Length: 228
Length: 410
Ligand SMILES: Nc1ncnc2c1ncn2[C@@H]1O[C@H](COP(=O)(O)OP(=O)(O)OP(=O)(O)O)[C@@H](O)[C@H]1O
Ligand SMILES: [Mg+2]
Image (cartoon, rainbow over all chains, first blue to last red; front, side, top):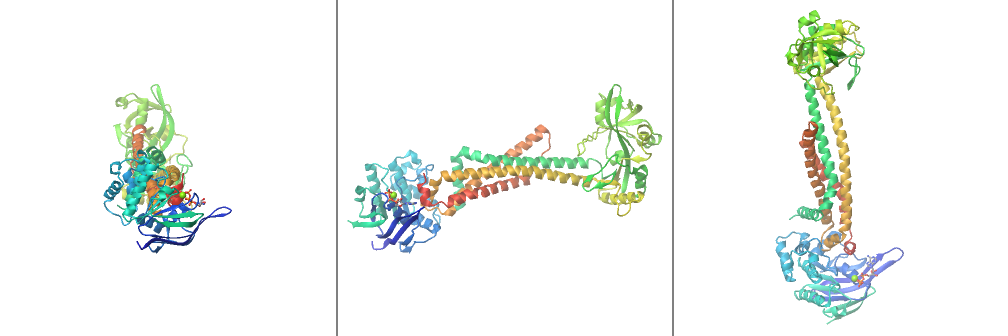
């Protein structure tokens, strides 16, 4: 664990609004090594999700630099960002974000649909991913036929299916009760044990305590960075 | 699996997920394509029918009327400024080598009385050759012959419609008497039915008397030797154009028409008539088809509308797809294939509807229709094109969504 998977320098994100400009991130310097298990914490509106979206290449930064696996991705094209999201990053959201009209299996297959070059055996891979989150027997269920915890497991299976280097989870337990939340956290920490870099956004200190490193964001800057 | 196949699978999946809506969306295209197909089928059918009727007018025939013509149509026609004479017809027979038979006739509408029925019809004073030029067989009895002509006999040959209207049974009409203009005539024959002209006139609503008799007894006030119509048949189909040239030159000479001046007669070959009617037929088809095309455009706008709503409704889905790695192009193709699939399937259903409706029209209204393969081919292409054209804007809109905004869309 010496190679940084993520390195940002003076990352700034501004939202130009009518009248005044909102500065969501005011200069983030962050280095994360491959295989880390990390929580981003902070009060509401501090910029956690914004940081997560930029690290996940869902959004673009305004100023500064961002290197992903040594590659400068600060100003790459939309298409390239889509490809990197597809191959290197898996997302887990608070609201699960599954396709409501597709089965659990089809939801898990989704990232492979956009994988290039195409691969064979996507069915088998999706089944394996479902099995690894303990839902092999729910493959043909629609999201509404699953509990919240199960839906989040399907989302994790989907995030895993293209063997990403990085999993980004924004409040993954926010819509779940404590017990189910703990199960999801156990699942995420097992991914960390498999060597995947896992970053969790949370404002819950109980959840943060389960990770190995916590950074605290306030008003768009990192004010604290502690490691066990 | 390639990107298009994936998109097609997604499209079919989403059409099935939103069955009713998809069908309603397709309805515009179904009706549009259906009506295009029906229009073209009916148009083609009518055209072929008319062409057949024109061929049926006579064999290798040239028709000559009094009065000059303008390009496109016959001006004047029967009656106006009679410029044709029996002597013209005789000269044509004598001096034009390409000509096989010549006939001429004079026409007037008159009342016919048989017993206590009477019937208004067109009385034609004509010659024995009329039957040959018009290629028109006699059903019962005989046609006017040279002897009848010479003696100006009071004999009449009935068109089948007249026979039908005046008599209960046809077999014993030969030899019976009818009165035309109060003169008694003896029936010597009944013609085969020839049907309608392309203009819709019933050719069987006619009686024939010898030209000489007509001039003497029925149309006495006319100038002697005047005819309304000269019919000429060429020796062969190949000689029709040659015959036309010969006849035209001869008549211009006989009528002393200066080189610069217009003809005082109108000469038409059946091919020319056929071409003219084909032209009007084409214009009709074009008109009807453009009306149908408008409905197709309306159908396309319907698709665009629904696709726009669909993009808005599925914003979150688009965001999810983008988050897991769908590129702009993937989303664009997905929605484009969806709209095209919808319009294409609508087009196919429209073609089936159109064929069904054409059959029904033929069956119920007795109109001939012809299932036109190129129309089907064109309709298929067109419906797909409608989907691509009207689906592009919504697809573009979907593809250019911002992933974050799409994901956070309520
Ligand atoms: N699209 C946007 N346009 C304008 N301002 C935005 C936009 N997205 C976020 N912001 C602003 O940026 C700041 C940071 O928002 P962000 O969503 O990152 O906060 P957060 O830490 O995730 O909060 P929470 O814990 O409530 O999720 C907020 O002030 C927010 O209003
Ligand atoms: Mg947030």
